[in-house]
Length: 406
Image 1 (cartoon, helix red, strand yellow):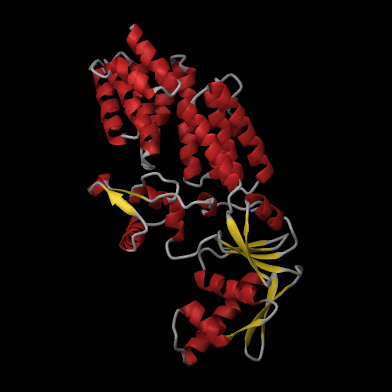
Image 2 (tube, one colour; image 1 turned 120 degrees about the horizontal axis):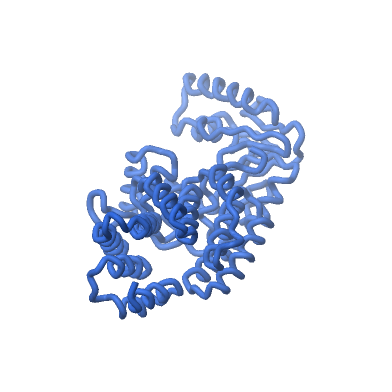
């Protein structure tokens, strides 16, 4: 490797993108193409970056297996940045194995963290946590140690473990400063701001107020009866009942919780659960059926009692009844929560992250675009969707994930 390639690689390692491009901008050899691709990715031109990295991989000879594996890792990182979550992870695993076999442990570790952060973005927290537990970051340089700590913090945030999150972020900040990479320090700072932003709202008899992650953790550890409208769970200190697949029952449970200790009239419950402004005997009969199902589902936690006007919720152990709601509630809130990270998402990646069909996602995107909430660029498979981040809200923490004790 000649001196210009070495200098450009060192410049990229510390975030000096323009300094790297000054040295290799006019070169067409394979190492220069690979470094130019990484530089364009750092500048945000992901399509150009992907094309350059692929050209570099083809330009390397068949015996240059390590260089080709590094190109695969670079392409995977570009795919991650452009939210192409369907990018073949088997190719990344094979590249990591090649790098490990040839002693390139740093780039192999980088490939490992890319795969873990993809799992995190997809909500597969158990897999990510098991893989991290088996990996020792101590021999790694500060930049990779910062990424390791950021990944731990991301898992802890989604598991609602505020103390563990702050500890990991503090470690990430120290490692990022030691690395001297400005982009990494900015990423840690952004994650730290997320910890202090409202992640949910508490709706109770005395009104609503925003909650930070620390407040949510305290609430979940309390003896309150909680209807969690972020993750579609009804729980108290001992038992959690998931109602994500039963939207009518959850809507009834939330309405009863918001009115507790009072009752909710039958007509209001019919309007809320069945989305109709008019009711007849068939709706009232259907309501009785759904209330019976709700009684059965919540039997370990609470009774649903009939009153003269409607129905009321009576928790068996908890004295306080609250609703944990999203900080903003509207149609397609989960899509907005993902798009609010400021990255450009494809509809297929959004479908993977939300665990739903791509067609449902496309309908939601079209509705949001018609309302002027989001925008798209590109066509066909290259089409991407984005929106400016919502100021002051930790929107990524709203996405469904396992709660403590589940």
